[in-house]
Image 1 (cartoon, helix red, strand yellow):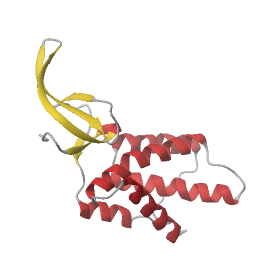
Image 2 (spheres, rainbow, N blue to C red):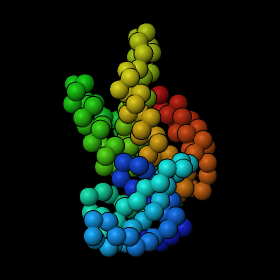
Image 3 (tube, one colour):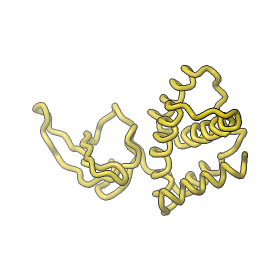
Length: 165
């Protein structure tokens, strides 16, 4: 069980701060609930402590965060050409929230964007949405793990990306 006052990764919402843990009765069933809010947001989430329908895990350690950042590479990308399959695949990765896969999605979309710019095209709306969600899931966790600002993480990823392209 997680503790009040700590950050966790909560399914599709990303890094969340546990404001309190309290007992509540809903539909005549009394359970312990996490009351939390997503990183840098005011909205509240209430979920049972024993909720097995969503993924909850601790924030990754600093060593893992550094490992994630070290994987930024032109060789570490997804090469799915079918648009529909790629969108479905990326959407599943967003749901799973695996940091190694999220950085790979980010790098893949950024490389694809560079190729489109070179061809005089723009990034698709779907790619923009997926990139934004992947960054909102991954960057706060990396910033918490490495005890730095989200903007610093974004700058670091951009810098690493520019080194490899």
